[in-house]
Image (cartoon, helix red, strand yellow):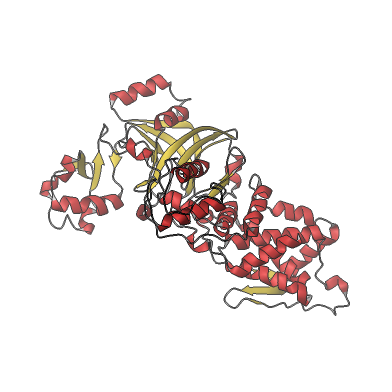
Length: 498
């Protein structure tokens, strides 16, 4: 009963119809109307451009080549079934799988019955409604599609990036002319701008405008984030958009009236209520070797003046080597060592205690106060990664453009405002201030849990309807950004025909 099996390693599609002679049209694969054909091609192309599974890209090539061989109806049916199969599995995949586009290997085999249902949809005139229903449940989906096509149609040559170095106004060197050419191509400088290798006032003002347009601090300094965005070409933008469509596909996200949303690449937190952004705050996320995990959960309690307990990773990697070198290190930093409920004097630790295995039975804590690493607020939500949102005793970090500084947790600049918002039904703001001022630890369960999402969206539409492209700070998309040349050419050819 199998119609075909897709074999990724060999790119083999074996069609085993076992059908009546071709003259018997009831057993042929039907061809939908032109509008539906275009919709199938567009949805397949978006999955191909997301560049997470080469099967979609290879099927796209097969589909277009089949127009010359006469096998187009069959390849169109295969394309439809592949898209439908992926759309049906999206709700099953975890939030983290969608953010990382790391899906289990798909060995789906489609059956004759699948094509019969496809034929029935065409025959009944319902194929178009079916295809519209298969579109990602993402606000402004068609606007994303148009932008992807726009980026893929762009044939403008991009400048080859120079090896990164921090560049400030007044700098001179060969890198400056590369930057100027990029700014000219982007419309930030006019084409008569002198290519003299000097970072002058004109370039400084243009760079500030570029940074402001992309949500960066407009200081004219070309750091890592500005550098990343300067050299984000049309191909990488298209990939970002297509991958964002998958990352955004979550029914729960759009059904929640209220939620807290952290987007790692934007280094910002938002509180959404009734589809409105009622609070926005800078955040600090995990550094590259201790990345903040992507997850969705529910904030169920807020702790005022929390006690900090160092995660085992931090205890092992950060504190253990320092305790070996100086038994009084913890005391100097205002930290305490415990085994169970018993406080331990680090000077009594044996060499065996100071091995990685021996140190596992200990935990390091920090009492509430001005030195506490979590500051005055901790926002708890169940998760397997032992992370949470919290304030900090080092607010200077929020002044940095690239705020990848934590060990995985999310530090929130407006933690006081967030606490008062989440606890608005539990206690008055004045009482919260009084408890915080007392320095005593006080946990407050929420009467109604608030969903929290930690996402990895490198592109999105802002409140003004403008597309925002963000640096890929954890390099999750780096390998996918360079699309195959024949896919780019195919997209351009297809767009010319649409």
